[in-house]
Length: 166
Image (cartoon, rainbow, N blue to C red; front, side, top):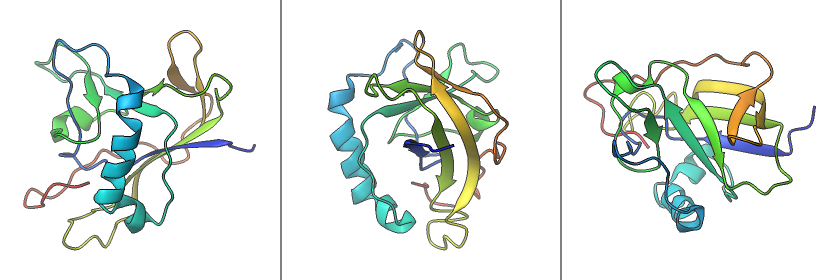
């Protein structure tokens, strides 16, 4: 099957995500983010490190079930911080702003370009997840998987002494 889109979820380091305010239900407008996300990836050297071209046309909303003691789901956004107890289960994925004609299939890849540490990224291509055959649900915009993952979810767990991962 040909995948005409690739949703590449980068920067799965535990301290590189933005956790939504408990009162926040929606992310801000996509137009405010696409160019800044691209610039952030380029400025952080992620595109160069991974040897990819990155021209986003949509955002991937990454949502974890709330851990014990937290009442709302945890959302992953570029920038900010995320603690390791949030990333135990495989997250859910939601598409924000793709063209109406692009509903799938999508391939989702989660990698950490700074594994095990930013100073010595000898495992920079470590994969946390590879899943194929994701399609956008037309009602909820959630991405649903129609097959078993190629590489099951391995939660991020950087060393305690490690600097923040991208």
